[in-house]
Image (cartoon, rainbow, N blue to C red):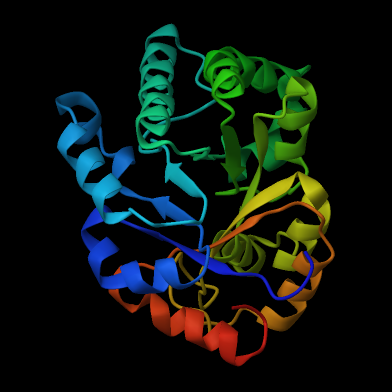
Length: 272
């Protein structure tokens, strides 16, 4: 990145009016958070899409959506579960098309259990990768056609390289990496994963999206930066080395307060 990066944010449509002026003052990237909800996916969300588009009139930043994730295992092997996963992924990418979004966030399928047990089985790692391919191939193909990028966010990942293996196996420009700073710090503090800056180093220019949130090392707090124990200066120093035009998205539990986190990072001289 060259110069100070511009912060963006993740929020539900209902919070757009509060933050609209801030979103429009610079080309801030936005990630809409409503569309993982199965009630919306199954019962229609045209009214919400129309409302969001109206509120975003004049917005010059990039637009992304958080895709479905509840109970959604991208490595599901049972054919019945695969049907559910693929349906939700298809609904998510179709909503990207409706909204004009060019990025969709999905959760990593790798678990704490996987870290110590995949290699216990002959071809265990490859078998999991094959299931991931089976479930992702159609939505990745759609994303390619749309010019949309799916970013895989670390959740329980202890080894930051596992998601890179998915990218290498697809060799698609429609698939990239996301890092959630709080998730990485949580796994580091509680389970011995590498620290957050190591996740960034591992991802390199495959990293196109960052969820910025702070935690205390005990739980996935989604606090504003400055309220937890993440060391922000070295983290942003690593981000500055990247050439990818990544999105820095504040993802805060209480979306009404996210300007506090933005102001904190601006005050440190790390972002705009």
